[in-house]
Length: 148
Image (cartoon, rainbow, N blue to C red; front, side, top):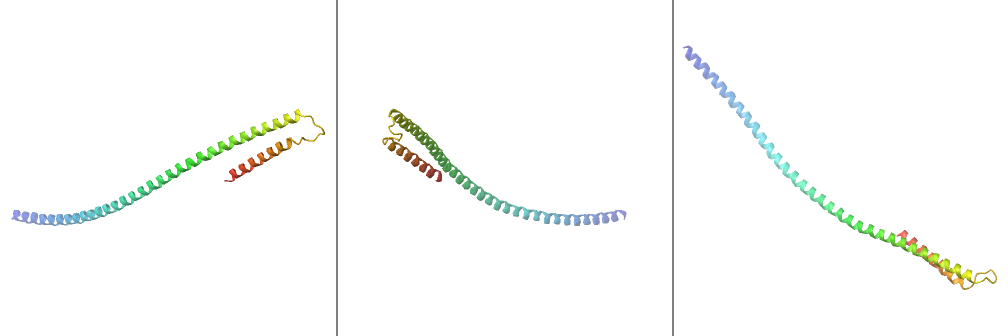
C-alpha cells in the first residue's frame, strides 16, 4: 500500500510539474511572440531610417558639389581680381614713370632756354596741361575701379 500511495503522490507531483511546465512554456511563447513583433517593428524602423539616411546623404552630396562649384567660380574671380590689381599697379608705375620723364623733359627744356621776363615760356604750357589731364584721367579711372 505504501507503494500505491507513493505512486499516487508521484503521479500527482508529476501532474503538478507538467501543469507548471505548460504554464511556463505558454509564458515563454507569449514573450517570444512579443520579441518577434518588436523585431519586426525594429526592422521596419531601420528600413525607414535607412531610406532617410540615404536621402540625407544624397542632399549632403548635392550641397557639397554645389559649394565646390561655387568655390571654383570664386577662385577664378579672385584670380581675375588679383590680375586687375597687378595691372593697376603696373599702370600706376607706368604713369609715375611717364610723369617723372615728362617732368624731367620740361625741366631740362626750361633750363636750356633763358628766361626773358621770368614768366614760363608759352611752349611749356601745353606740356603742363597734358600732364595735368593725364593725372586727372588716371585718378578718375582709379576711383572708378575702386568703386566697382
